[in-house]
Image 1 (spheres, one colour):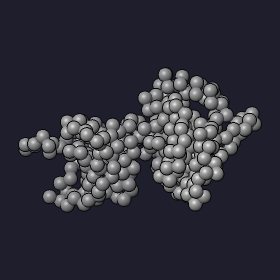
Image 2 (image 1 turned 180 degrees about the vertical axis):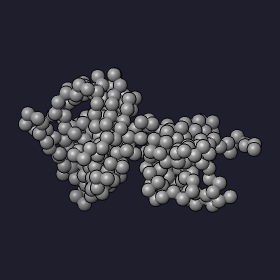
Image 3 (image 1 turned 45 degrees about the vertical axis):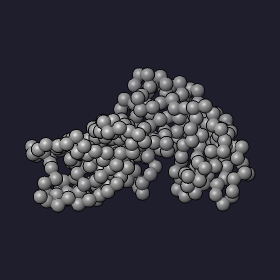
Length: 300
């Protein structure tokens, strides 16, 4: 078969189990389509390069959670074929590991003094400035100002009125009802410092992702926990706070954990931890993928 340059499709097949025959979509299945969020002005050659690089990451993620799939980079889209009659759980698992960019950073939460300037100046029906307070291991008191609003869009609109410290960014704590927008300092740990990620199961502990850092990453993490004693450090995944903890001691083992709190029960949270570990092990996507469509593929 001959393919034109504009329609070139590169397929990678993932095979699991004892069958020697590679799975395909000839007998039907479900196809998930994701669109690449390419920067404006991206040329065709560069777009193809980015989508194919994203395909490699997705292949690794699906393989890690043992989802059988046929993955194709097709122009500016990525198509994930799930052969046969995949369960709703399998479809949900595929979506859960393909969509996240997977950029993880450890950032110290700033005291939010810049946001404090907005106290009493925001429309009460839209947003407010609040203060998060906590104590360290020695009883010392600490805090951080944040904007609470019904949506991230509203919170960021008001936060745009102030000037943040250099290298700081606004990070979102999704919350249950309202979102909270904090100021976070420049990242100390990024995905380049992560050597491994797993989701150990313990009947006594909440589901979590265990991170192992490289030698350089371990040194950075030690310095961070020493410098930020008593402060909060957030694990920020794709701009949103995945977990936050108060630093109670200096870390010396080059390891950290991200506690998973989303999910109806412990079983659901453990499943989410396994998926997050798979995302982090594969590294971040080179381009964001947006879920576009789910379609039924009929047998040929």
